[in-house]
Image (tube, rainbow, N blue to C red; front, side):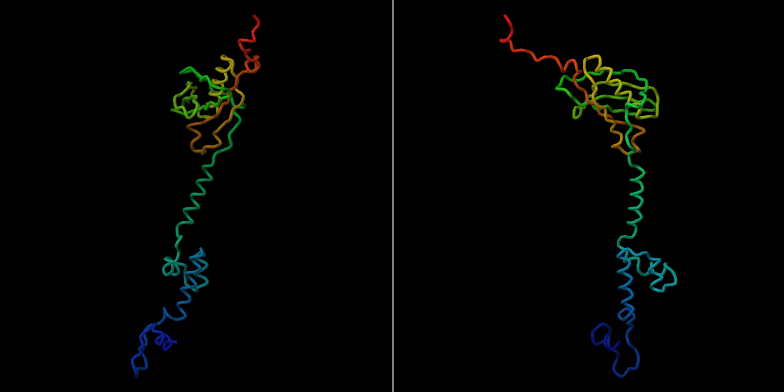
Length: 225
């Protein structure tokens, strides 16, 4: 084998007349195939413990010491596993039906004023916790200013704070001839880690039934003289 390697130019030829003195060719002969086999296995994601057994190494430490550089994704699988676990832990819980939640007691801090608009319109109710108290405001994105604000009794329950906001909007609508026709709890769209500190709901407001059924105004030229 070594004369063939010398002819191929892979190792230096032996001095003429010498009976020994070939260049060390361990890494250029069959042993090289072991390296190829090991590197292919590790690059494909095989675990070092199994590979160490197949290679006949005394322990996986030997395998890792020689072949760790053939593991391009080393460390990535562990980080990916942790990321997936954190994502699963942080998944939002299903949103509850706010109609079944008892609202917190609240006090109006800034009166609710809904804009004059074509109905129905959608109002975003946003609750944010400061200490134990929830500050609940109503707004209509993309308009930033609040349409009104309430503050609740101390509580750690975001759904009850949102229910208070919905009750506040409903009370206002009843006073001005409007009606809440749909309530959506948006907390299910947010990570569970956020929910103890803030919450969101969307309230659809429409004209009350009596207002919607008023006859249309007649043109002036059709009025009886």
